[in-house]
Length: 422
Ligand code: PMP
Image 1 (tube, rainbow, N blue to C red):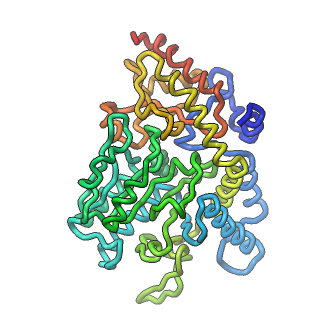
Image 2: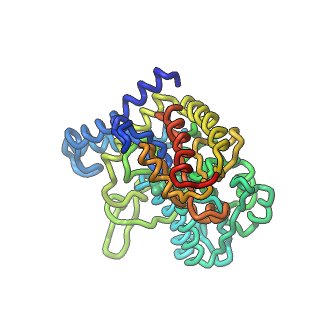
Image 3: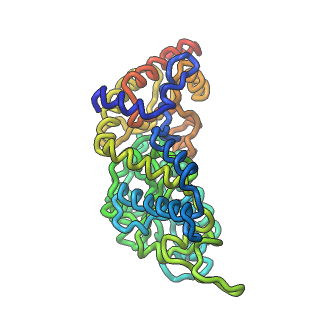
């Protein structure tokens, strides 16, 4: 983006003028945790509740009809944004965590019901994930393994936290039924080279689940051609509201995926003895959906499309190219992630010798700089790096070079403040 573009984009985000603790606008470098929202999303939520709120797919009144149209149009917007031709492959969820649980517990239900299809896990079958996963793509698989007698195996890491793909044939075997891995690490910023993993998974007929929670807002995606079977999204990381997300799955697999939630809105017919269910995707959407959030998320995705995902990726790459060498030059900094700019995104986690990340985070907050501190829901990955926590700065379409300067200038000041000899 040019400076003028960036100023225009930033003007769309009211929260960016909120003052930080030092009296300057907050430098928000925590989009990987949750993104800020442009005015159009706030307006859409407001307008929905003011003028169109009604229950969807029920009854015949005007407001219900309008809400239903907006709700179903949003499905088309999400599909279009993600490069999905068949919009019925988009299932509304509460977020990426709910989407990943929907697939993982589909395997649990499949095993319980002996469905005989791809989701019928048997004792001794193998579930593969990686040591770099967010807990949302790790803990559900552990629980499903424990409850089905399946075995978990991990794809391990290179010293810089990228996946080590040199031993894939040992990890992915004839017994592997599912391979789940992240597209873009929320800690290291590494973008996964997904082709070799897909190839290995395909060779043994395993289902491929890609955690696209972080890539969704930062890389142009074309799910139809990516070669994976399932992907998951959180609206709140993509400039949309909280409480909404999606599971995308190939239709032939969604049609076989056992449901784990049931109730209203997902049935075709019910008797006291048994029930039949609606087709995909409605069979997965039990209960009242977060309609306003869904409509707000669609507005966010239209906004992102207006900016252009290609241009966003270029902007964030330029920010990363600027920040990374400067960060590495700072005495006492150790990066948790790859240094080469080719296959990484604007997610920079690091430790600073002698300063606990929580202290560093608080110090930066006093300068009006918002970063994330902690384990970022990836404890195994932090253990791999030999630390319990780190500090993370992440970039977004609104991030400026000046904000990066404010963050980086804070680091030596923190070392002075805490009296560390870096
Ligand atoms: N996967 C990754 C890689 C993430 O970064 C996150 C959110 N930090 C999730 C899954 C879970 O997303 P949510 O908490 O929005 O459900």
